[in-house]
Image 1 (cartoon, rainbow, N blue to C red):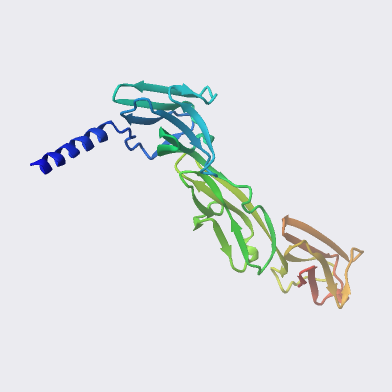
Image 2: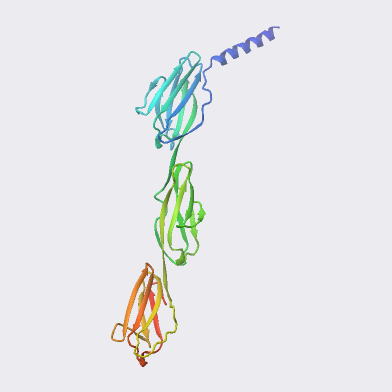
Length: 305
C-alpha cells in the first residue's frame, strides 16, 4: 500500500507542477495580408504569473538579428502604425502586436519570447507575408542588337507575393513560352521586333517589360520584274527591293560600269521601313545602245548581294 500511495502522491505533485508551469500555446505560423491592411500578431500564455513576454521582429536576412517591439505591457518600437494590446488575467494572458496600414517592409518573421528564467525562454514564431503586385527587376534583359544566326537568350526576373508567373509573347501573338528564359537558338531576321515579358500573380493587373531585338543581316535583293520591254525614245523604269541591316550601300551597274545620275539615268532610293529600301532606276528615252542587263547591288559590313 505504501508503494501505491507513493506513486499516487508523486503523480499528484507532477500534475500540480505541470498545471502551474508557464507555456505558450501554439500560434499561427503564417499570416498573409495586403498592403494597406492590418494584422494582429497574437501571443497567448498560460500561467503567466511574473514571467515577462517579449515581441521581436526578426531581420529576415539574419535570423539572429532582431528588433524589440514590446516588453510585457510596454510598447518599445516608435511607429504610429504599431500598437500593443494586452489582456492579463490570473491564469492566462494575451499580448497582441497590432500593425495598421501594412507596408511591404512589414513582411518578416516575428518572435514571441516567454522569459522563464536566466537565459531561458520559450519562443514561437509567426511569419507575416505581404501581398504585393508583381514587379520586374532591373537585371532583366533590355533591348538587344544581334547578328543573324546567333543564339539569343532573353531573361526576365520578377518579384512580388505570391511569386509571379512569367510568360513571353510578341504583340498580338499567342504565348511563346512560360518561365524566366526565352531562348532563340539561331535568330533570323524574321524574329526581329518587340517581345514582352509579362509577370502576373493575381494581385493588381500585373506588369510587363518591352524588349526590342534588332537583328543585323546582309542585304537581300529582290526584283518584281526580271525582264522589262520598252520602245526606243521612251522612258524605262527598273526597280529593286532591298532588305538590309545595317543600311546598305546601293548601286546600279550596266556593262560593268557603276551608273550615276546624268542625261541618261536617274536613280532614286526610298526607305519604306527601318530595314527596307526600294531603289528605282529611270532610263530616260532609252536608245539602242542602252539595252542590256542592269544589275542592282547592295552591300553592308555583313555581306553583299
